[in-house]
Image (cartoon, rainbow, N blue to C red; front, side, top):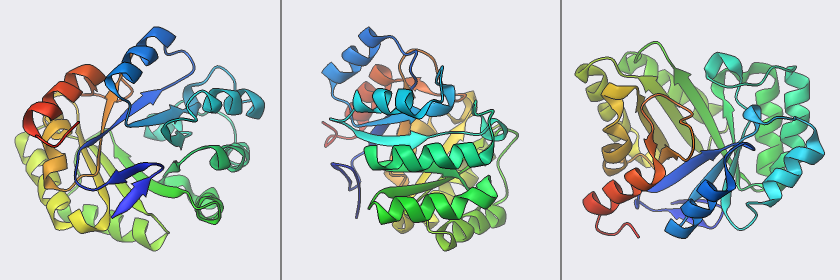
Length: 236
């Protein structure tokens, strides 16, 4: 069993809300009233990457379990500066959050981010995103093995589903690795159902939005929460 801040990931579907500094405060407050699980700080979408500014934004969610994400453009993010600047910002924000999410493709900075996070006793999510389609099961298994070898506490795989067979591949992958702390998402309209039902197969987290979606096929927070409460009786 693994925890993300104060939230124990024990089979109860947990919702991650992706927020940036432009998310309207009234929407955040509304989500708080429903009960926030986990907040993903999409730092790559902030108006400023100044470390003091980023830390001030993080303080607003000190009472929540938080994930720091500085996503690169190639995997759907907005980060435009150098990798060394990204590494520096990761190192400054890690002490203030519960977990860090960095792409498996990050290359040179990945070992430093993993090492810094683990030294601070933070959870490491290594993520893979494919906006073109769903890889074959053999490739997905390779992604899992590589992420674990590089120090992932949680492995997140998000791939575009263009047909039902893609859902089946991702579902089988999730079931096969359910005991390895996995998060699996089928992106796109075809994959929206995965955000509700993949937790039943072993996926630890599901993502929602308030304001604007951060990935294709995302559901709004309130809508997803209501669906989870309908299909998972133990979901508060």
